[in-house]
Length: 211
Length: 211
Length: 211
Image (cartoon, rainbow over all chains, first blue to last red; front, side, top):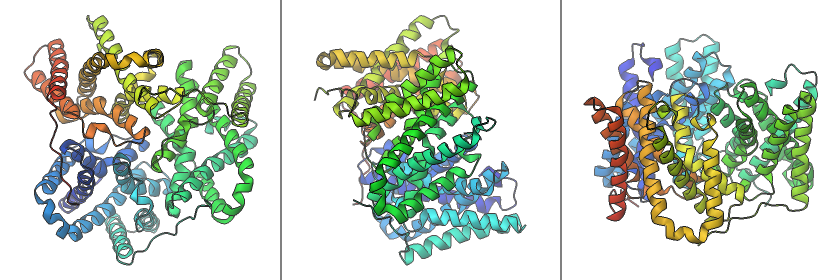
């Protein structure tokens, strides 16, 4: 998130990132606990879910790995673990809240991913790819580690929301819209797509196999 | 493929690369469709199958990721998706053609992988490793994502063809054979091994477990 | 291991690394053979088990990949393959010896991982992360490739031994204890934890799912 560090809204963004990272980590920890992983396994899955996408993005862009620059991502994961450990019975009632955090986190991850590639002057389609990778790869690695087919490939417009968010960012940048407005519009756009898609069960068509 | 960009045969190589990338992407998209992935999932699997090996190679060599330098790999994948979408019923009759493209693509990937490591003055065994990684890792990631054991570990001399191709390249380089001749000989050698191995069902022995 | 190359105990460390790499490779090759992989597949799994953790560490730290600097890791893997190929019937009786090599290898991997991050002046928690990644990621990739849930998430204090070893290293460094003493104490500490945990079946608690 260090791209934001010199902006004035740093506190708001930090809180959003905190909530997003915790929401992503909680999703990993809950899936790990359903598979009877031990405590450490659950924490690893939570951490990988939260930082996996940004890690692949930073490796591909050949920039320093973001979570190795600040310890707060590990603290967020440990905090998420404590939440699941002590409140797992009540988490079901919080599913809606967690879903909101997850959506907001995704919107933010898309913005961060896009801006990291943009700062390196990559073309638009690379920026959109990095925004999407930041959003979806953590969940993909989580599902590989728990030995399931990545849910991303069947979930309601999850990756599509990232791609459309990235495209909106590029259009607004092209039109020289103010950066902060562009960031907020993109994040909100991603959140709205995800909420509508989940509410109305919008999915991409399935490619029927010939088998 | 940008290693070839200043050679005179750029058009021929570009067409071969185009066909190889499409063949690799088609194999991913078809396997994804057999697992009922949505459209986006199928495109991702196709893309990963086509570029996964080169991506790991470029990460290990610490050079810019090849598919982030030119958008044609994404276009190839989308083109492959359209082919599968509209012509999936007829693709079975084209299995032979696709197999040919796949073999030619593999031969080309081996040459590119070897040359990228050679350009960085790595020893022969690293060049052979990079040639093999370029050829096989895309299919390995594809199989991990669809939650199957990588077929590469049981397929007819697939990885062995890459290794032997890399060894032939190193021998011809050592003998100071002309580079273009070396490239063509290596690619043809890989194609021939794959075709013979598939025709006569040549496989490596299986290591019997003690269980 | 090149961090050790200018120390006086190079021969002892080299032998330990040799044994550790072979032990890790043997564990991969035996699991691959139980899944009826062909020879090449078994060698790949053995190699990935032995070098996977260090490879991810070097990618994250953005330093040259260790196994591309020296061919001995490939020779160790081929040697491990020959052992399994010819002596698989007798390996069961050697399970204890192999377990010892595996523990010693793990202790050494933890030390190497910690020192690589420390040499780049990363904070303590990154050094502990790199020590742990060096120790556990090879086995995780092995289990993903053979399509099993990584055993690391259920095994007796495997990752915990890495973390505790890393913490001990950081405490001894903080106290300005001699480097060689710190290295040996850390490695021995990891080995002792693993042996006690295996002997007394010590495991982390499982996070019970709400399902």
